[in-house]
Length: 205
Image (cartoon, rainbow, N blue to C red; front, side, top):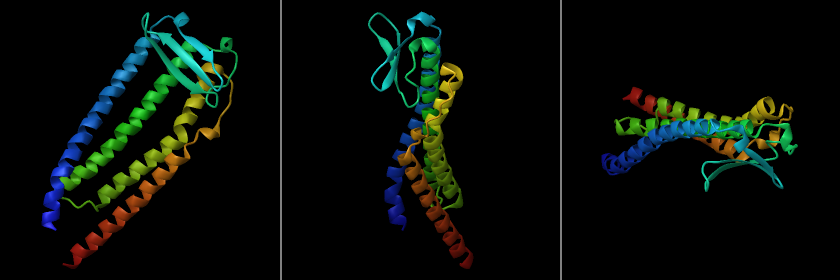
């Protein structure tokens, strides 16, 4: 058992370092992305355009003479109404800020939970602990919540602040994300069961 643990540790340490870099890198990218979007928001309203495609909206703003920043939004989240009925700048900011914030917060939180699990193992603890089971359960819940609510929240914000037309699309729910979250919850129950077995074994020694 000790030999196995000794061989596994270098790989776990490298993984822990990579997760640490990913964690703090995610925070830095979140701050940089939000600041970048807010800087774009300072540009004059007339620079923002909304172009209606076949199944998507394209919201764009020029950053220079040769560079344009664009975001594509399906009609399922943003109704194909007349572009004169809403403000292209507000639409751009709502979509980009909401997507950026939700994606990075979910990513940072998820990476953090995995980092804590590996960190507990490196500190000499058993992977099958109640604390790690709780971390896995939190990870599963976050994945499910993001899959259920991320696009729905974007849909609601667009209705409230852009189109003023109430239209909620339940088709935005990610079934794959929900399935992944449920699988993580199952794994958390396995970790919890393993932790209880370990406690029972230790108490009989």
